[in-house]
Length: 585
Image (cartoon, rainbow, N blue to C red):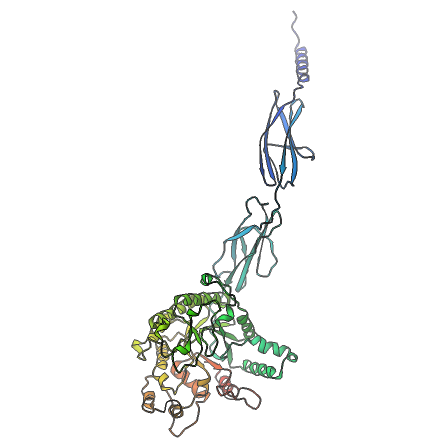
C-alpha cells in the first residue's frame, strides 16, 4: 500500500472532525440547585452538564429578555404576584436547554419606620472646630430594607451622608447634629439629634463692674426692645418703662444685666418622676430672650436660678411632689413668706446639677454670658426638725452643687449667693460652716457675695460681713460681688437703723462695729436721724471691705418713688452718676 501524503492525512482528519461535530444534537441538562426567597428578593443557583461542555448561561425573569448570567443569580425589589425564573445553558455545539422555577411574592406593605442610632459623637463641649459622627441604620425584620440616610448640622437641609462623617470649620457656640434614615418603602425614621458646644477660644475675660439687677423675672425682649421697636402697639406706661431701662442700659458705666428665673420657667414639661434625673427637656426661651437684649446693648448677662420665693408662689416645676417643697412660713415667725425647694435632699440636688450642666452646655461659651447665680442660701432662722433639714447635709449639698457648676461653666462665673446656712453658721470664723463652703469651692470662676451689704446692720457686720472679708483675704483670685437690694439702697444710717428696728443700743452698739477686725465702717453722730447711706457710701464700703468686683444694683428703689420724669427715683437720680463716675474697678 502506498503511504498517504501529509496533505491527504490533514484533509482526512478535518473531515472526520466535522463529521463528529455534526452528529452532536444532544441538549445539555440544566438544574436549579437552590432558590432562596426573602421578602421581595430572590436568589437562584444553577448548573448544567453536557458531554462536550457548556459554553455559557443566560437567565430570564418573567417576560424580560434573556441576559448572560452566572450562578448564583439574584433579583431584588420584585413586585407582589407570580414570577417565573428561567436558567438556560448552551453547549459548545450550540444546543440549548432551560429549566424554570415559578414562585410567588406576597409581601405585606412595609409601614414600619426604620431606626437610626448615633454610635460615635463628640463630647458635650469640645475645644476643636471639627466633630465626627457615625450612625447605624436598621430596618425591621421582614421590612423593605434600608434605602438611604441623610444628616445635617444645625439649620442646614438634610442631605445624603455616609458614616462616619466629619464636620469641619464649626463656629464657637452650640451645634446640633441630626440624622434620619429611610427604607425602601420610603418610611423615615424619627430624627435623632445630638447637641454639643464648640469652645475653641480661651476663657472669657470676666466683665467686672456695675450691673442692672431685677428682683423678679423680666423678659427684657418683650418689655424693652419690642416696645422700642414698635412703640405704637404699647401703652404709655409700657413705653415709659422701656425708655427708662433703655436709658440705664445705654449708660457707659453699666457692664451687664442680672435677671432671675424661677425654676418652673425652664421646666415646663410635666416630667414623670422616674425621668427627672436623666431628661434634658428644658425650655431656654426666657434666657435666650434676655441674652439677645444683652447682645443688643453690648452687655453681659448674669441669670439667677431661683428655687426660692418671698411670696405666695412655688418656684418649683409642677412635677415635684409636695414633699420636696418647703413653705417658708413653717420655719420662722418673722419670715417674709414664700417657698423654697428642699435643696439638701439628694433628689432635688441632683436635678439642680442636671439643670446647671445643661445651662452651661448651652451658654458657657457665649461671649455675652457672664455667669449664673444660685438663690440666696438662707432658708430661715429657725429650722423645723420635721422638715428633714440638717445643717451639715445642706452645707455639703451646696458644695456639691457649686463644684459641679465649676465644671459646667469653665469660661463663666458661678456667683455663690451665700448669706446664711442655718445649723452650721457660728459667727466664729474658725468654726463657721460658711467658711468651710468657701474653702471647698474657691476658684477664679466662683464668686462670693450676697444681698446683705448692710454696712450699719451690726448683726451682719459681726457675722456675714466678716465671712466676706475673710474670703477677700484668703481667696484673692475668687471674684466678690455686692448685691445692693432695696434694703441696701435705702438703708438707714446706724443710729436710725438701731432705733427703728431694734431699739437696743446695748445689743447692737457701735462698739461692735468699731471692734470688727479689718473693716472701715463709717459711724455717724447720734443726732443724724432719718438719714440714709448714699450710693457712694455703700459702694465705698463694698469696695474697701470686700473688694467687690461686681456691684448689682436693683432697678427699683425700696420706697417705690418716681422722679419728675417718671423714672424710679433712686437708680436714675442717685446711682447712675455714681456708676458713670466709677466705670472700671
